[in-house]
Image (tube, rainbow over all chains, first blue to last red; front, side, top):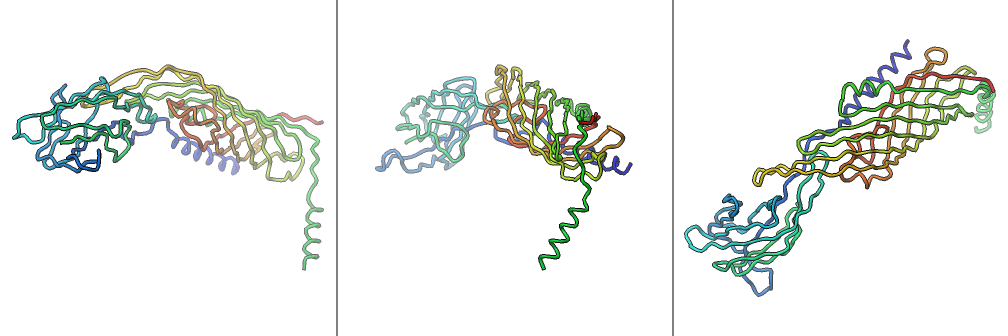
Length: 160
Length: 213
């Protein structure tokens, strides 16, 4: 019976080990990707530009009126592309006291991307085209068209 | 100094009982831990059996088989899979037999495993507070899994022909690339589909039949 006791102990330990291999894990990865816009003044160094801090920058989605990002003396703005569309229109103002708000339109492709069994799927995007108005903006340059959640990547530069 | 020690080793060798392989054994094993786990964790179901045949010189040829299913039902994904599997390999007993009817064993072994898997259509939900949720589905598909296993375990004869014992297994998926997207939630015989290496455990009740050469 001593033999049996020992092997039953292993049965219990085995079930504990197996319990650690559950099918469902919690989602610990980011499930949304963001596009990062930087604001610049033109410089002689080509398309690099010099950082331009907007006095009171506001980036707003035209489709739903929601403010994507805003702040005083700010030069980096995060926006979220719509997974249900292929075009996004933004209102960009440099200062609430100055009339003349510009519109930037990004056209993009969506790619359904698997994250993990815990987090499911998300969309990654590729910017295909950009258009803008010229009240305050001089030009918009797409530097990194792939929006895939890679950290510290600036996707487009807005020149004033 | 070396000569007396060598002589002593020779004496021990001579005193060991010589067990001739005059009896063959075929053992049928059922993993009783799986029905218990099936009852505890509804999202994974598996049944596993093992047959081993005593060849000679403490070598056992082993064939295993089974079937099962897995289900993932979360906020973001919903799909399931079913599979059958087979394994072949061998066990090498580490304990010398003390007498002809001594069939207790502690062993190590090696297996090759093959699983044939059918994954169902998967439905996904991409949650987005700003733009609203997006839903869709991915078609199901058939897959094959290949893996190798390193085994260790014991078998203890509780009554004539009736054994109990356990295996602990380290498993290594050989074709993990095809499981990068939507891996089967659970592969019976292997384990969680998305992992390239895994530890597993079996607890067997076995019955052996023996005959003389």
